[in-house]
Length: 392
Image (cartoon, rainbow, N blue to C red; front, top):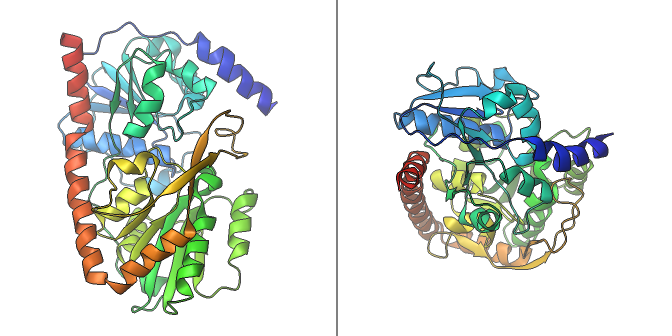
C-alpha cells in the first residue's frame, strides 16, 4: 500500500496541483508553512526562517502542518509578533514528497491565492522525478546552497535563489562534559546526526573509523556522537551503536537533548567531525563553526559554500554511486556521493590535537566568514531579489 501511495503521489497528485498566477507582492505578509512543532531538520528550517524574517521586520504568519507534533519540545518558541493580515506569499519548508498532503490540508483554492515559494533542501546532483514534478507548481524556489541550486535550476523556469539556513547565536549549556562523564582534559571529538535522513548519507561509520585511527596515537581522546532516531525501528542505527559496544572512548547518545545542550556539547568539543557523503547545506557543521569549534568536513556538496582550506580541515573525496535503501535516495540512476577517507580525517584530528591554539585561530576565521556569508544571503535579501525581478 505504501509503495502504491508513493507512486500515485509522485506521478498523479503532484501533477494535479495547479500553479498560482498571483504576482509576488513585497508589501504583504509572508506565511511560513512547515513542521513547526516537530523536532526534525525541516521543522528547524521553518523555525529559523520565521525567526529571521520576524527579526528583519517582515510581517509573517505561521501554518503548522506537522504530522507528529511535539509542542512540548518547543515550549515558548515563537517569533516576536504574527500578522493577522492575509498573506501575499508563502514559503513552504517541505520537500516535494510532503507537499501534496500539506496542500490538501490547507486547501488547493487557498494554495492558488498567493505567490508560492518552495524551500527545497536536496542533497544530490541527480533530482528524483517527484521533485521535478513538485517544481512545476512553485512560483519561486529557495535552496540552502549553491550545490542544490545547480541541481534544481535547470529543471524549472522559476527563480531559484540560494538562502542558507540562518544559523544564529543561541545559548550553549555549560557543564556538558560533566553531564556525560568526559574528563576536562580529554580531547573531545563530536558529531551530531539524524538517522532518519539516511544514516548512509550522514556516514557515522566513517567518523568512528577515523576516530579509531586517531585515538590509537591519542589515548586521551573521546568521541561523543548525538544521534536522532528510533532505535527500535531503525536497524541501521542499531548497527552503528552495536559497532562501538564495549569501547570506553566512544559513546553514542540517543537521548533527547535541548538545542542549548547540543550547542554546549559542540562548544566544549576540541573538534567537530562530519564525514557526510552529501549535504544540502550542513546545518550542524555551520552550528559548530558558529560555536568556534574547529571543523573537519567532507570537501563536497553544500558545506563547500562556507568551508574552505583557509578556515576548515577538508577531506577530499572520490565520488561513488549512491547505494541506499532510503526512499528518497533509492533507485536514482547516475547519482553519486562522496566517499571521504577516514585516514585523511584522522590526520586532521592529529593536526588539531598538536596545535590547539592555531586550530582555534583557524576556527575563528571560519566563524567570521560564515557570519558574512549568512548576512549576504538572508531571507530578507532573497525576498528583495524577487521584488526586483517582479518589477523588471
